[in-house]
Image (cartoon, rainbow, N blue to C red; front, side):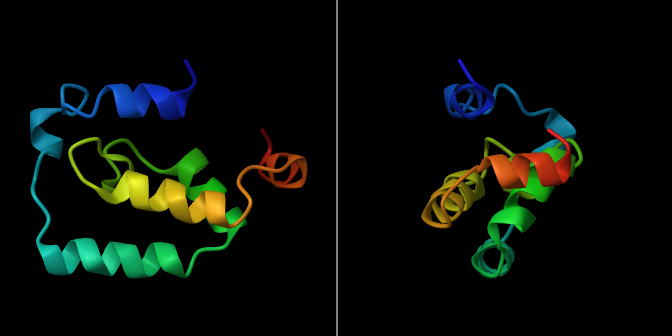
Length: 88
């Protein structure tokens, strides 16, 4: 199971600490969707690689990760060039 599958597996929220379960308003969620829409593939990978724990985009109790992943895949997903550029 890779990390993306593991995150989907934990969609029930059991992988999120209680202090990270602060709800976001619909306006805040839309603000994040707008940010994601402006990201390049490199931006997506950098965020995924370097985001702090409980970053809103990667919280399993919010709908942003699926939106992020769909956007990233539309951009072509992970490439060897991007992987090398960020040091993976």
